[in-house]
Length: 185
Image (tube, rainbow, N blue to C red; front, side, top):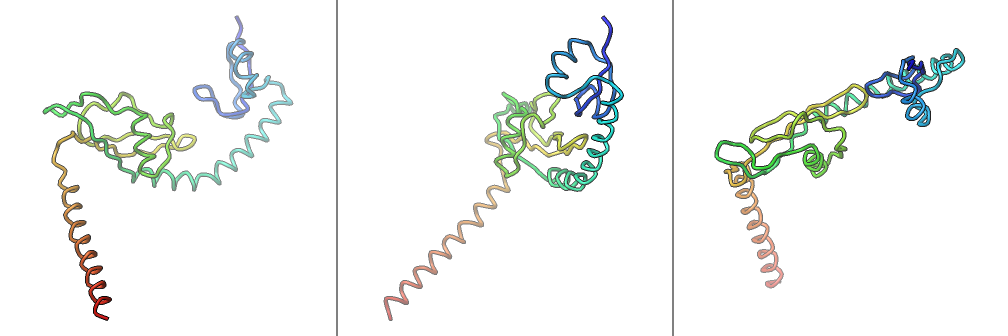
């Protein structure tokens, strides 16, 4: 069969960007691209319309570039921690997959869709791992995923608890002193 020339109206992953003329199988064009409005027949009139639309999209992309850069910078600073069961060699009994990473990011206050987390294979070892997250267009950020073994000593966690206990005692002492002053007066 002969390939069919279509003009892309939107960015189509693994095919092309808005305004590109591409050759695709007739069934792919007829059953997927055309019904979804992702492409149009490659006529001269359509090419002129899409060229105007592509210019408008390029302006919008330029305006959005600053927002995307800020989002990439914010995500690059994000570090999430997973606590998993592991053997003495640091291999996990299970794994940390993209869905778990997205949930940890949401719990940390940054909403990330599972589809945006790019992980070649699930994480199966204890340690620090860099994970790529799709932000927009061709922009990606790398977040840090720290996988710790359950039962491993967490010194930073213990230090935080020791700081909190005296603060609670001091607050209680202040309340007792205030009550004693009220009782005297």
